[in-house]
Length: 312
Ligand SMILES: Nc1ncnc2c1ncn2[C@@H]1O[C@H](COP(=O)(O)OP(=O)(O)OP(=O)(O)O)[C@@H](O)[C@H]1O
Ligand SMILES: [Mg+2]
Image (cartoon, rainbow, N blue to C red; front, side):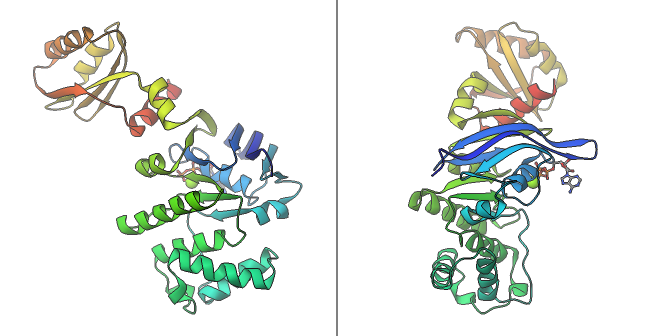
């Protein structure tokens, strides 16, 4: 087994003048679950597609489960599974025909394949739909089938591109529970992109934040909370007021302020004594404070802050 499930160096993919993925390097250890975060168009799917051999990098190197995506793409495919952003299948194939077809493409011997098909269909709750046409499937069922398909190779690394996108809350929870089950059962490495932050917090040991094709931060959520987070208070005003933002920003012990609707998230340094000074300043600019209190920074706030700093 390779030391790293993912070992990519200076990976780049251009579309015309746009660097969709721009000189990205990333190492992910075996057996952990890793999240790719960042705004729409940041380069997550493009990176996933290069790691899963679906598109060829323009430059740089990606070694997945010990195999180079450019030199040994077939070997990479046999050691990974991939659930794409929008899983689609041949509508006129049945569930079992679909999985047999994919299994053949991966050269999985028949006996093993049949066993895995049954086990995986049972796992994702589609065993009863074995002989149904995939064309009849709802979005949630397609996602389940996609997961069953991705597990056919008994993957060392499982890539999931927004695995709960467009699912209802129950369907999303089912898929999340399945992912957590997989993590507990196997030593599979999970690499997933998601905009559903509580899901990322629940599943991922570490994350990388993408912006404009680059990785701008990489750590555990806990560490980021510490390094990016700092000490915080949250103040709610009756309504959004930019004057308050300007006044608070000017305070020397205030490191950062986020204004989202009527909510101010203020990060300060120094001890508690500065809190009354912050409140006095807010009061001076706007007399209508609804509430205030200490606040543990959320992953959303961390992301917001990282992206804001990156754009400055
Ligand atoms: N086939 C393509 N041709 C041209 N441009 C592309 C192509 N695929 C992706 N892009 C561009 O590359 C950039 C990165 O896209 P990508 O799909 O990797 O983003 P993403 O981080 O997955 O976003 P999202 O969160 O919306 O899924 C975007 O600007 C996108 O428009
Ligand atoms: Mg994407």
